[in-house]
Image (tube, rainbow, N blue to C red; front, side):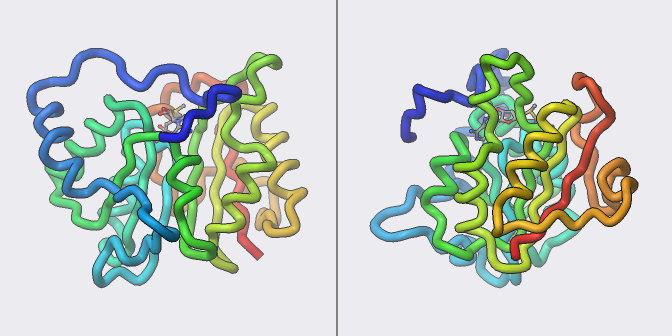
Length: 226
Ligand SMILES: C[S@@+](CC[C@H](N)C(=O)[O-])C[C@H]1O[C@@H](n2cnc3c(N)ncnc32)[C@H](O)[C@@H]1O
């Protein structure tokens, strides 16, 4: 994993000890569905899923409720996820195992390192849902969504690909909206306040979202890669 000491984005990569079952899934299932490190050249995500028609990406999937939900709804789509927190990875592996989901590939680690390995225009849709808010002013540079990462997202997304960003922190919502809208590569699709105030019809509620830890109601910003 590339080190990003100047702006580490997440606090801890492990919490309470895993159960025996979770550890078994980390040891046995994760290696089978892990996104391989790119060798020479860039990774072609479609090659990871025989027979799928699109590849979606979820960044920082937490406990994986949204990712597993989308994978179950869309068995013809391959979904990639990156998450450094082992407890979250173990939770998602449990859902994959219980629901026998075959269209998910995972990276336990920093999504920025993963994204850097993807070929240009290789992802059909991306989700960044309730990323760590870093509400203190001096920590804002740790936020995932900032102009450099927006450029990387533009590079890997296909023209026409949707990008969804959600947060319940008002400052993060307005700054992400400004940063992403400032990019010539993205267009915000909202036409009325309900388009960002109400959860989109295709959204799957996450555990973190339900905790309501932010300072505003959840905001859903849907963009399209132009
Ligand atoms: C506030 S939680 C939200 C999790 C999930 N999206 C949800 O809505 O329940 C943010 C997640 O992003 C993860 N995260 C932080 N920095 C990351 C990075 N650089 N790459 C991938 N995931 C990251 C954290 O470990 C954490 O699980």
